[in-house]
Image (cartoon, rainbow, N blue to C red; front, side):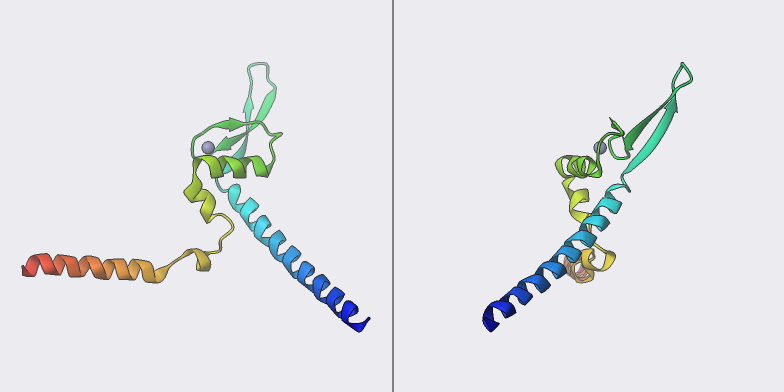
Length: 116
Ligand SMILES: [Zn+2]
């Protein structure tokens, strides 16, 4: 009986950690989706205003009935590189060593050409 109780406790802990982690990552992603979209209103000829969502990248108009998930999918299908950057904080997305190594290689290559 003690074993079962222990296993149950473990599962509960794991689920809590995973759920809170997933939720914050998703929230961050959704917040970043809105960097590329904007809610706009236009005044029509009859004086009524119409709201729409504008994609900053392709300037496509979307209905305001769409959810963030729709715009997330739009980014994923049309701009995969931008979509991949969503939900990542600055520290995890930057790769300082990659640029450094590439610059070094580039310089060496130039030096080699000049020397030769
Ligand atoms: Zn777009």
